[in-house]
Length: 598
Ligand code: OXD
Ligand code: MN
Image 1 (tube, rainbow, N blue to C red):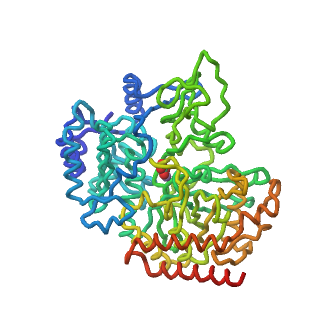
Image 2 (tube, rainbow, N blue to C red):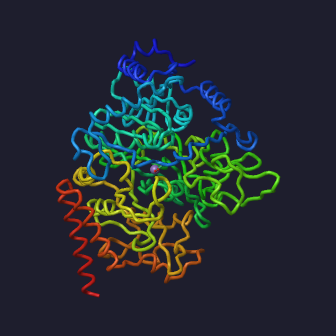
Image 3 (tube, helix red, strand yellow):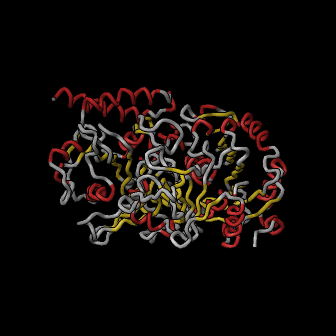
């Protein structure tokens, strides 16, 4: 049974007063309080199928799986329409689009005025984090999109449980979303960290419309975390169980669509059959210090919203098994047998009589533009994943031994190296400069600054963000060690030098062995680099010179990189921490010393 307003008003009048106010502005035909039940979900799906908004996939092959096609102008996060709204511009910082709070509210109130006429307004209460965890937080998203409701049911713990756990509290993130008219020129995703409010209109793309995800869990939560002394990061969390059954947890920040999900779900390669990778999360980590000073992480989400392209039984067999039921596919192609397809999934076997249909519903033949959108996605519950960590829902989270920073770099960044200290590691993250991908609008493959993979997701001034990271350095002596990894270094022939995917476990093993003090490394100006022979390449066709190439420290290249990094850092003015300048200058002088010694 749907939740009833009259029951909720007795427990949480703040929530009901806000919902009434939003309904007064948006003027929907009806209001539905979501309970999150199976019946409710089925009736939403039925209604979407009836209206042609969802397409049923072959129910024998893909039970309870559906295809959703978004508007062709609304297929990725739109950073140019994403704003941090504060009273003072410097609180958002120059890396964010900014609107003054009052101006933004006026603009948005006008757009939201009557925007739900003829529609149902859904109220979706949700919990981010394990139920009952002291680190979980609440949110309520108001939306007129059924796609958003059925997706949030997968991505969060939503409905009656959230209402029960919220009780009478007024401390929840308020999200208001409307598809509006999907007019791209009037698309806004506005965040008001000072009041924990999010308003999103004229978009239905997941990253812009599922407000629990980037908007709540990173931009708003990040701003709260800074004030409360924890961290909200764009990171995977995964457990590596070694041959002795000992589990080490790592957290890794990688820019969108850079293999973060595949790493979190890595399948051990042959020779590593006694290892297990136990996923906790593939996108977002909330980190806090426990009473022993260990940095522990929870995954606030309950679902995966993954890039489909190139996911296949070789790159990610466990995920391929996970999406065979109860999944929503967005902007993928539809095969003649009504199964989902995307580039890099499997070989095609098409006959002329039964064509493939592309992501926009048009007949498709091989050779033309891609059948699936490059940022096509699937949404599926974490609980269906075969190698889920038993600690996934642990209210205390898991203790992190190593933090990884990564991203696509064809040159310069070695396969792996370790920071000298927490502060040096913060510099490593702040210096991230990576190739862009299709997860956001814009050109793909150009170098872009993306500190800690957080540039699009930091809800406040990034200078203050760096300071917040540094502040942990003095809070504990048991912080994780920090590493940078790069699976994407190429040779003279532009081919990748490292095989990647499951073989990345060999690098993770070096990392966890370093943390356990089991393996030595070479001290270089940029950090501790493995000896070529200390990464196990048994069974791989990798020569010693390829390994040397993968681990080479290009002193001139780094000095060049640092010159452009300096300009980036200077752009933060006096909000850039002195302590990080010190790390930066130390790195420059180590490299210069090495250059003159060569
Ligand atoms: C995502 C992203 O969807 O980073 O996770 O864009
Ligand atoms: Mn992401």
